[in-house]
Every structure is written in structure tokens, then in C-alpha cells.
Amino acid sequence: MKTIALLAVLATILLGLIGTNSSVGGPLTIMLILFLTMLAVGIYEAWSNKRGALGWIVNIVASVIGGFVVAIFVGMAMEMMLPHLHLEGSLASSQHPLLYIVLAGMAILAVLGSWTTLQIANRFR
Image (cartoon, rainbow, N blue to C red; front, side, top):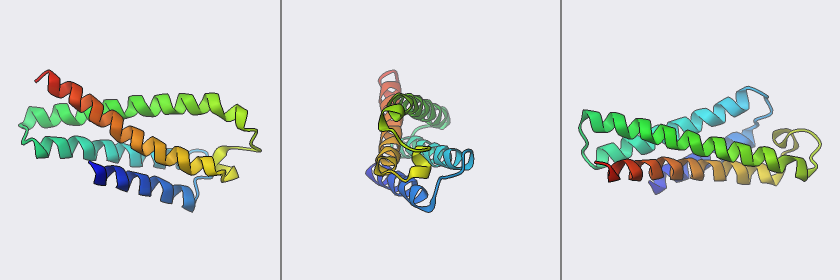
């Protein structure tokens, strides 16, 4: 799990360094990285606990749902925080250091949200 989180953080920060100035392509690429991270968490947990076919499906679905719920809440928190930063333009175009902190935090929180929903699902098994 730590390796998945580390790879997700590195991928999102690398994407931020390369440039996410596009208004559509940047956020979609970030969500693709987070989606692949959520899938990796669900697959890893199913594989490590030797789940059956139904267990794999439940793990992947629970992992993706948990990750997207966290991504939605992080997005809402950022929308509330951005007006107070007084940036000239968007966060991505300004290359403010907060961009990299947010990208790393979103990756870590997506892994945490996926893992949390998997732990909740494991309680009901």
C-alpha cells in the first residue's frame, strides 16, 4: 500500500512539474492517475487476501467509490480555499507551491479513501 501511495504521489507531482496548464487535459489526467491508483489499491487488496471473483468485484468497486468520494471532498475544499489565496489566474497556471502540496495530498487521500472503504467492506464479510 505504501508503494502504491508513493507512486501516486510521484506521478501527480511529475504531472504538475511537466505542466497542467490545460483547462481540460490537466484535471482529466490527474483523475486518470487517481483512478488507476484506486484500481491498484482494490486489486492489491483482493490479490493479497486471495478473494474470489465476487470479492475482486466488490473490492474494485468499493475502492473506486471511496477514492472518488475523497476526490470530490478535496475538490470542494480547494474551491473554498482558492479565493483566499489571491492568485492571478488559476493555481495550475501560477505554479504556486501549493499546487504540488495539493497534488500530493490528493494522491495520498485517494489511497486513504480507497483503503478506508475496503476496510468498511471487510467488516461486512
